[in-house]
Length: 308
Ligand code: PAF
Figure 1: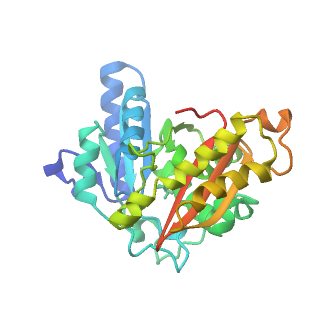
Figure 2 (figure 1 turned 45 degrees about the horizontal axis):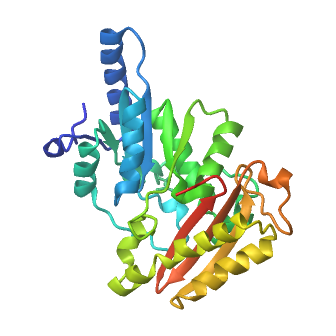
């Protein structure tokens, strides 16, 4: 089995769907023989270039499951042609060391050809209606179609009991919950808090693109969301005024150019405007921002329940 194991890392690295199926059958059978019940499988899908944010998800999966698997795959279907697919950091060996250090059992690291074969041609996509009309979806048309397609495929391949996503990609988490519910996929989704650097910057694989000067300026993005929160906590409910406080805060760091600033329902992702009323606040609000600093696009968000 698993002929392509990277055994030096002490972690099982599975390269094909057949290897994942064989691994799954073996570990389930072994666990059943010992424990007389089926194991729970916790799964953390990633695109690699792992940092403490990803590791927090794997740790959560480790705490709550018998077997922990991750995937490391830079999914071409969620990048537009002008985006950073080719430049996206690929650091498989370092990633394996990290996931091993937090107790992951196996990683699925397929090639593009395994996920989207050319022969016979790959043709099937998962589309969430309306996902291209809100914040990150509107800024990156086709992004959520790519995410929903690859995550559905990964769920079918890995067959997890529980899957873990980061609040850092907050709209992605909302979309994943949506298609899992709509398609009756038998997996429970857990969304884990954003992991931030000391200075407040949300950890992201794309932080690696920042020059030292940009990195020093980058915490201004989270500070702008804190300005939203401060204004909200003072009782302001007008979305335009709350957004203006956020923009004014970010304007203090002129290197940033805002791509979008969005206030949405935290469950449905429906955009909110005007004065927020109690009914709109019931589900929680999700405030998200994307901004360019030099050639790097950073995203961040807060939810009305989130406290630091
Ligand atoms: O959040 C990510 O890293 C990716 O969008 C995901 C969920 C692994 C799908 O490619």
